[in-house]
Length: 340
Image (cartoon, rainbow, N blue to C red; front, side, top):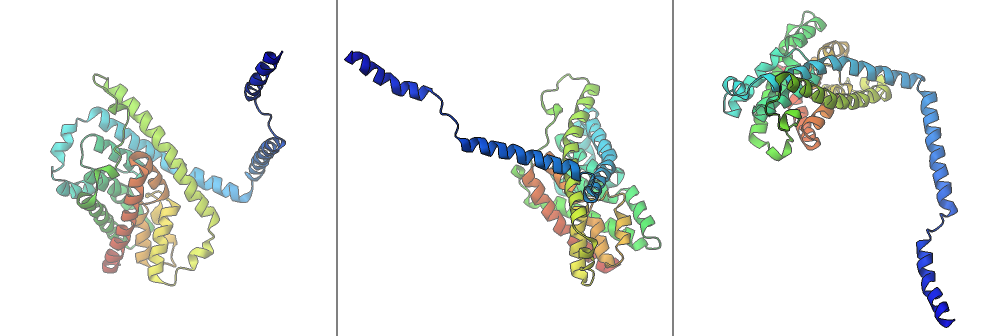
């Protein structure tokens, strides 16, 4: 009898340990509250989706994405074609072996790609994968959306009778792209740059070039398209939340105006083929400030930063975009003071 009691006493703690504790009333209350708040937030979002503010945000987001997608498609097609059909030895013949000499050549080559910044990122990544020096590929990335013929013609149309604005934009953009390439040659570190990877990096020996092209196109477009939407959403949010009266408060000081329009170019994320018309409408600002808007925008904006983060890594995008922002402003001020 005593042994039976001792055995029961020894088994009692084990039985209690095996029995799961009953949830207290507090957990149920918290869970119910969380579900209720989530449902209320979803209901408010659905109710407010058709309100004026959200309608404006939605319209701006769709406009930015629709504006960028055609050039993103162009860039990914060119990128996939480079990876599938162009041998690496071609670039070794076209570009100087010395990265410092390859940078200005790559900057000038940006004039042949009629696209915006959405197209330049995948192409630059493809060039790096084909053995092009990162400094030259980055110089091309910056110059392509800023100095191609479509952008220069649109600038001439937006500023009729002012050819000096077209020349100033061309020179300031080339100087900025080349300077950033040379800065990478002098101070860039390989660990800062995450080289882009795609289907071609995963053992594609013997694969059909057409199949390689299809896989590369699919990978690059889906990868970059998501970051385009993220950047466009950030730009649309700024457009909706910041009233125009805030911008007008900075027109009195020329120096503050330059910084303000440079910052505005980053957050508005206007496509480089259309930004000249936006700059022409900012009549309260000085010509140099509007030049800074035209030079900074195609090289540093929210959607471009998002695309660079996805292609080359977040730490690279932060370093590179910050340095490009400062160099672009300096180039705009110097060239604007001479030509405008």
